[in-house]
Image 1 (tube, helix red, strand yellow):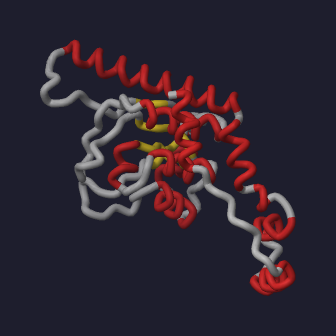
Image 2: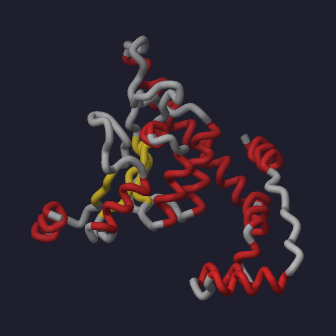
Length: 224
């Protein structure tokens, strides 16, 4: 609140950010992931003043994928910017490596595009070259590779969205929430008693539909 008050006092128009990180330098941190940060901001009435800056390596340390963190922040209207890096999933600390994984960058850009882009932040490199890469030219390779990886991910994500098959599948998968009892549940106008009446009247339970995970993974591979 002190920072927000000072911002108002001096007329600062910039955006404030909070960055989730589960550990380092301390063992347990209140800003452990996107959900914890959102809870903190809601608890203290700061949602209107802060957005989240998400880092892939911090998501890894919290036991999440970057796409999960992006979706959590976006659903709350709090996605501000991202730190473009990656980490070693086999290690328990922040390695801040340059991103080269096309699947990762595609997932990131797909979530970002689906939620209308980054507002007002951007894609920032919070990364460093490896210890053995000590020559100046290594910095060029690292930054060019990271930029190319995200540019490629953006193009792939845009192609997936233009194709429409992934969106159509997801829409159909969750279509039961768009009408009937599903819509009432989402609107908050149904109770456990209503659900009991609904299922007793329905009788036979509808057949489950396959999640088609392998089909969807192959669909993404068409564009990679």
